[in-house]
Length: 400
Image 1 (cartoon, rainbow, N blue to C red):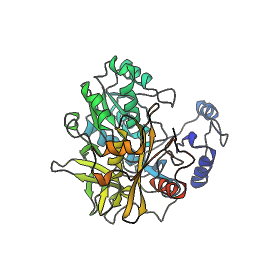
Image 2 (image 1 turned 90 degrees about the vertical axis):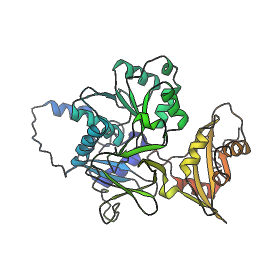
Image 3 (image 1 turned 60 degrees about the horizontal axis):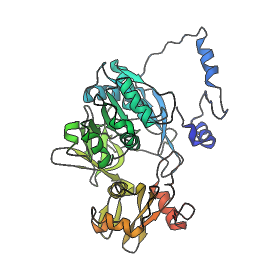
């Protein structure tokens, strides 16, 4: 059960109390034995015979925490194996492929997007010697190791595309995959304009995390689409548009949360994400179900507004949420300006009206120094809404 040490000692103690593990290996907070002590024991004359049980829990990965305490997702051996099989077959991976793993190994993306599938098929996996992402080092390593496939979250791909090396180093041998959130169209176009292959994925800790595929050739014309479901995976949308997933790669449930059932009566995982399907059968992400804003009788998807904000040349980061008002909910945005830019709330609204319907333009745009995150590094719209109503983010306001 891997834990992100950056979340601090209190989070580690919460997890230890929640799981009650037999062994804690800890090189950070001295809450358990150190790794070198474990390795010393491993080098002794010790043998252990293990037979895989596909129903056995292989790892617990903590997720959620936006509506309560973080939850441990129970990932069984079958989930890991089937995700690897599904990925190899659907994405066409072979023993000739090589990847660089940039996502940390306390995250399902580090383990299961490409590492386990490639190890299953006999491919090659390159692991960094630091958990700090560096765009220049990544570009150099992708080229030096002749990597053929690489997955990064949108901020990583954005940093890669902005590196001076991006225009000097040939990465045409790499298939780029974006995951962990929608890739901004202007970032995607930087890769496409260089002739690089790229597609958008979608996953979650509880399912896979690999679920869709769209070819790079088709993705160029559908930058907000994740394509069609992978082999052996069943998908459908609920009456309100929530994506429901069924397949052998889906997890077993949440550790120590017997009262929390994330499955429908017929066995589909309720993802909590709203999707749409076009007439070609391609799926597109709209928003987290709980984050959709209802204002004046219209639905506003916070993700769409965030994408529009982040594509403005002077906005570095943004988060959009709804706050109660007379007509339902008001669209509220908090935004981080790029250094050196002096813009007003009216400037932003004027530019947004060029690309968004008027009812989607935020009623308030508040400039802050940073976007607040939860204990596990996610943005909680519920907490943003509460802070907005409580004090208007006065402790992190950017008044420059």
